[in-house]
Length: 122
Image (cartoon, rainbow, N blue to C red; front, side, top):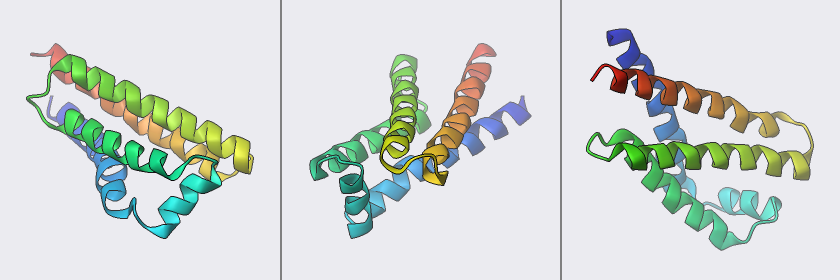
């Protein structure tokens, strides 16, 4: 049981740092804005994406959030990672940036699996 809790929090913490904390502090940097423009998205899209990422991370880490909302947060992040990989693949070709979102999706899947393992025992 303790192993499951540790794996859940490490994977969820990684997602929270990567998708909540980093975007909150870096979204207004010129590099972040250029990254959104490079992929062909308007600047406001990056701002909206950051708001939803922060809300999604809060949904994942706060225990009082209903399970259905957590499920939607997991789904939202899965779509985000898949579409990030597709966008990078179309614009830049098959390079490291194309596969990084898929790797993070793997971490998200681990978090999701262990979220359910922890809730089965309750």
